[in-house]
Image (tube, rainbow, N blue to C red; front, side, top):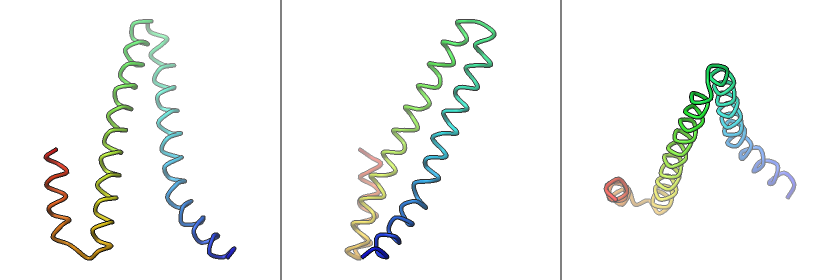
Length: 95
């Protein structure tokens, strides 16, 4: 039982650790941008804050779309129905 959990935790960590590093790196880059631009003017500081918020929002939306597509595709692949993948792909991108 413990060995099964160990392998599952190891597999989850192999997925989670790069995502955590990506999130921390993005946060640090945003803070560095704001620190450097904030020395120029208050208006520039506000503009950088808005830009970072918009880019984070867009990255989140694309991440959710990618995740939902992967979930749909893995369900269909689990049933060995490859024609449904093409149908799901077309309907997913058109809606």
